Length: 181
Picture 1: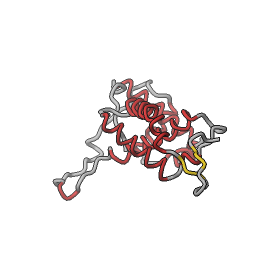
Picture 2: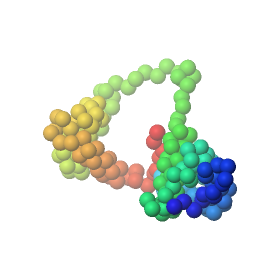
Picture 3: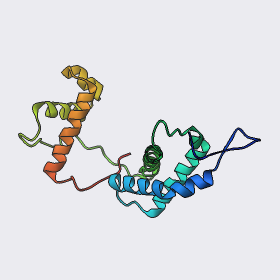
Picture 4: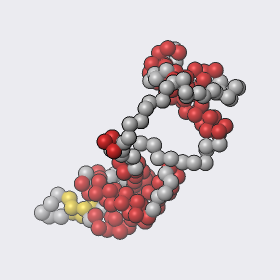
C-alpha cells in the first residue's frame, strides 16, 4: 500500500506531494546527477534542477504517486526508473542541434570519390565488416541487412555496436562522450 496517501472525507484520496518531494528530493537529484554525468558531458547543477522539476511535474500531472505500489517495487527503484527516463527525455529534447537552413551558405555536397576510408585489416570480423559496409556505405537499415545476411535485426545491431566500439578504440576516440540526438 502507498504510504503517501492520506484519507480525506471529501476526496477519495488526496496525496501529500510536498512531503513526498521533501523526503525524496535528494534521492531523485542524486539519481539524475549520476545518470546524466555518465551519459553526457557539460552537465550543470541547473540541468539537474530542471530535470528534477520535469520529474516533479510528470509525477504530479500523471498521478504517479497514487499509482505507486510497494508490492511491485521499492520506492528507490520506482523513483530511479522515473528519474532516469525523464532525464533521457529532457536531454534528448534540449541537446539537439538546430541549424537554420536559410543562414547556411551554399555548400557543395562531397563527391564519393573524394571520401576515402579503409577499414584496418584484421580489426573487425568478416561479419562485422559486412554489417558496417552495408549500413554505412550501402545505406541499408538493420532489418534489410538482416534479411540479406539471414540473421536477425537484433544481431545486426549488436554486430554494428561491437564494430563501432572496436573502431573507436582503434582510433582513440573512446574517452570522448557526445550527446547524439
